[in-house]
Structure formats: structure tokens, C-alpha cells
Length: 126
Image (tube, rainbow, N blue to C red; front, side, top):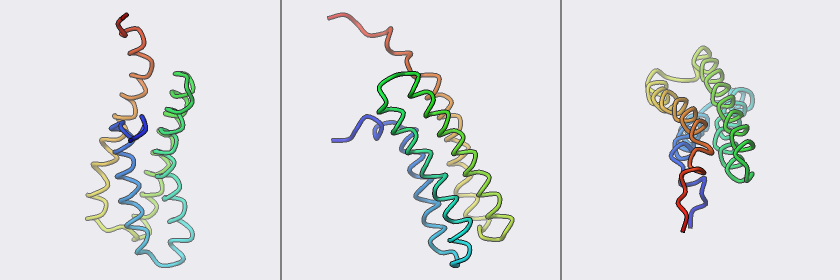
């Protein structure tokens, strides 16, 4: 049985991004892996970890706070991707594969953030 956060589309999207980044970094040389690689993997994994933690906190305010942190981690991931590209660690093909994942994830995080707590008032009485 999946936990609630695993069913979230935004969590699944962030997991795909993190897995794609992992697959790329695994092929880098030791210096690149040990420096930039570790940073980019941590920031990408942090996106989904914060979505999961926010969902588990139990309050809408805490959940929103962690989604904002996830959004910051996504922007950090974008920073590290830019650095990796500038250092010739990413190919244009890899960038083309990652770009739509990021371009779809940011608005999805924003939409998820706006949706938190909105369904509470919509529950029907039994």
C-alpha cells in the first residue's frame, strides 16, 4: 500500500527528476561526482523528501512550509545543473531530457502549494 505522499503526482514527478539525475551523475569521473555530483543529487532528492515530510507533518501550515522548501531545493537543483552544463558534464541531450521535467515540476509544486488545505471545507457531512 502506498503512503499518501507517494500518490501525489508532484512527488512522482520529483522522483523521476531525481532518478534521471542519479543516472547521469553515476557516469561522471570521481572529481565531478565527489563535488558537484553529490550536491546535485542531494538537492534533487531533497525536493521529494520535503514533499513527503510536509505531507506527514499533519498540519496545512507545516505542509506548505515544506513544499516551499521543496521549491527552493528544485531551484538549487537548477543551479547545479547549470554549473554541470558549464563544466561540460552534461550533454545537450541530457539537458533536453531534464528540462521538461523541471519546467513541469515547478508549476506543479506551486499548484500543490495552493491546493493544500483547500479541500477541508469541501468535505460532506455523513
